[in-house]
Length: 320
Length: 320
Image (cartoon, rainbow over all chains, first blue to last red; front, side, top):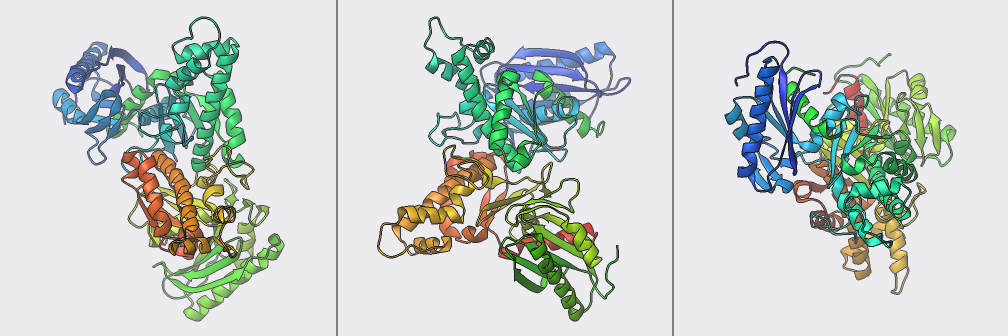
């Protein structure tokens, strides 16, 4: 496997492939983003997305030559879906991209001539927060991303826990209400249907009684709650109640030191996390709940990229 | 730390301290029970229980001398509660024994002059099934014991997962029904209140319409269901529905290869596990549910003892 020649400490090309955007960066061994780029994700299938990914990586390699020409240790890619357990080169299913059995790793390796490593994006967000963010001081924690859906990466006893087939961490599909709202997975009452952005908007539409149009985005509901608007405050309390219930179940099972909350809804900060902590204190067993810190993510949208860089540096033996 | 002199391969003294009985055995490195003893657990506190434990261990050492006088590598004890995280010598809380902060490890070490190791009993059941039972072929699995309560030990990526403070695996307190039956933990609708033996008996009392007295034990309800009695069959289906729901949430989170079911209720076998599997197939994400085998425990009531022996042999470097 060829790696590019250059001076100084090697760098990683890190990519976070999302449903709306493809983020990429050149990252050094200190976890610093030397150059960041982002392009929109085309709505169509692999054939449209592929040139964007390949182009982004090519541009980042050009950036690398411009910035000093250090060795590129490899390419790490966070994928919003599941990888084939025995062939982590193949994306077996990525619902937001409508991909099935896409040999992304092989294609990128052939195109770039570099080592290429794929991993689930929620898992990489956990790795990123562990390396450079809110998870640095913890050995067992979850990074829960609440946005369009609910993602969850688990670090247990200091190591990423992927599960038998790499699909662990589906906290978003923990069923809380047997007769609850319909979920994209085909079931009912999954945590995701009660706390993710579409749930916040649905509640806002159901509850709106006053004059004027309701805000269309979850962040507007949180902003209204922040201004003290009573209906918005009640919605945030309801969402926090379900999220805290899911967290209590998670903590009783895994006795984590921390739950690190990120994503668009997670960015609501203390407005959301305050009542979440109250619910956890009420619903988790004291031994599991009192120990756990529930804190905001530090790395925001770059957690996945930093995790992808860590993946490359670890696989190449450049980092523990 | 002195260990007893003797010929041949060392043996472990293994104890499983339960709310109703104290089980003990002399176990060799092949996991065979060379001698088994059981005494009832006195209802009163530590002062009454202590002489029974110490006496049982002393008798097992006498058995060892009689059987060939092999080295005793140490004493392993499974405890129905939590150990102090930094001092696994002290039982911080064992609700069924009404113990708080009992220095059991130190007392046993002083009394026996042998190395003594304590561990949570559900965790040791998982270790036992991993070594000698239904978990031998799996790297990531749960051993769920459904009896008076619901216990759960987790082996993840081949290693016992204890959690940050050693309290992981409280599957029994996963809240499924926010307004459900009251639980001994002070909350409502925990899985334990819906599937453990007292729940089976409660349902039987509520539903009984026919002539004659209802059976007083959960196993009688399962026996009636096995004979085709319609009310009993409906109760088993209801219990299986809740257990399958809890298992689906567990599998979505941890993507396990197997859930191994033991305990008094678990002994109902296919009568219970058949409908549990159907519920899991319906409620778990296909990637998590289809992979997982839901199977009966192999070791029955001795899983904890065999796990306690494994603990001793591992700590003493006699087993990987």
